[in-house]
Length: 217
Image (cartoon, rainbow, N blue to C red):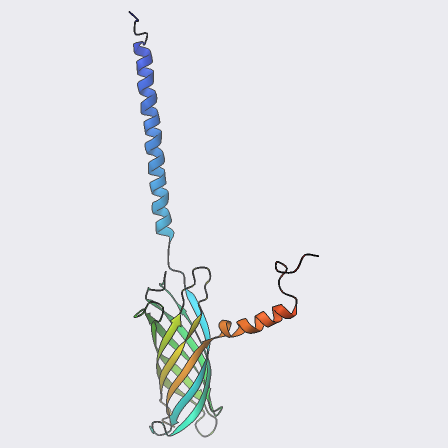
C-alpha cells in the first residue's frame, strides 16, 4: 500500500500558496474596479461650439411699428454649449452675434442659449440676450433685448469641440432707445465650416489632391 508522502509542512505550504494566489487575484480585481470607477469619474461633458451665417429677411419698424418695411438680413452668430455628451442631451451656454438690416445699421450682442433635444437630431435652441444697435444720426447707438428660436440640425461631434449646425432662425428684437425700433427676423442659419468645405475641396483638387491619393510613379 502506497503511503501518503505529503507532510504537514507540505500541506501547510500548499494551503498558504493557494491563499496567497487568491489574495493576489482579489487584489487585481479591486485595482481593476477602482480604475474603472476613476475612469467613469473622469468622464465629463466637453463644451462644443458652432459658428454660422444667418441670411434672410427682417420686418423692421420705428416707434413700435411692427413690420413697417421688409429689409434684407445678414449676420454672423456663434455659441458654445456646455453639459452635452451625446446628441440627445440638453445643453446651455453663451452666444454672440453681429448683424445688419439692409446695411442701414450694425447690431451686436449676446446672451444665453439653451438646447432642448425635442428631436434627437433636430433640436430646438432658444436664446435670450441684449444688443446694441448703431444707425448713425439722429439715434446713434441704442440698447435692446432679443429673443431667438433655432430649429434644425445641431450635430454632436465626438471627435472635436466643433459641431456643424444648419437650420431656421426666428428672432424678435425690441429696441429700448429713442427710435423705439423693433424687428422680426426670419432667416436660415448656415454653418461656416460646412459652407467652406466645397471651396476646400476645390483648392485641394487644384493642388493635385492629397499625397495618399496621388498616383504612384
